[in-house]
Image (cartoon, rainbow, N blue to C red; front, side, top):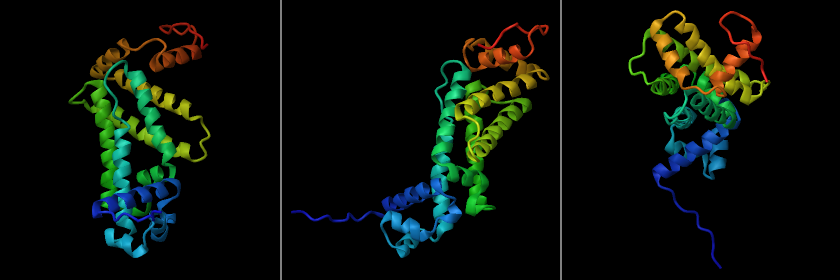
Length: 240
C-alpha cells in the first residue's frame, strides 16, 4: 500500500500555480469579490503562504492580469495568408473565445478591476491594445501607417473592446453575429476613410481585390446593396 505524499513545489512553480488559481477565480467573479482566503483554499495552501509569495492581493491580481493580457494579445496573432476578411473573422472568433471564457476577468482587465488607477494595470491594458494594433497593421502589410490608417485601426480595436464589454452584459446579441459585424465594421471604417484619402483608397482597393464574393467583405457589399436596390453605382443584389 502506498500513501500519497504532497510534492513540494519550487518558488517559481508555486507562484505560477497561484497565478493560475487566481486567474481562474477572477474569470468567473469580479476580482473585488475574491478573497486571499479563497485563493489559498483553491491552491491547497494556507493564507500566510500566499503572502509568502505575493505581498498582497493587488500584486497577485496584477500577476494574473499579466498572464491574461499576454493570452489576450496572442489571440490577435494570425498567419498572414489568404484574404483579409476571413483572417479578421478568425481573430474575432478567438477574441470572443477569450471574452466568453474569462467574462468577469476580461471586464476587470479592460476596466481596471481592483487595480483601477494603477499605472501597472493601465500599462498592461495599453500593451494589449498596442499588440492588437500592430497585428492588424501586419495583416495590412503596412510598416509606417498614415494618420488616417492609424485612426481606423485604433478605432476598430477600441470598438471590438467596447462591443465585447457590452455583449457580456446579458449577451443579448448572438456572438457569431457580433464577430461578423465587427469584421464588417473594420471594412466600413476603412471605406469611409478611403473616401477622404487616396492612400487609404489604395489600401482598400488592394484588400478588396483578394476578397472572395462569398467572404465577409463580399457579404457586407451584398447586404448594403439589398438596402438600396437600383441606386446608381450599386449592383442590384438581394440577400439570400
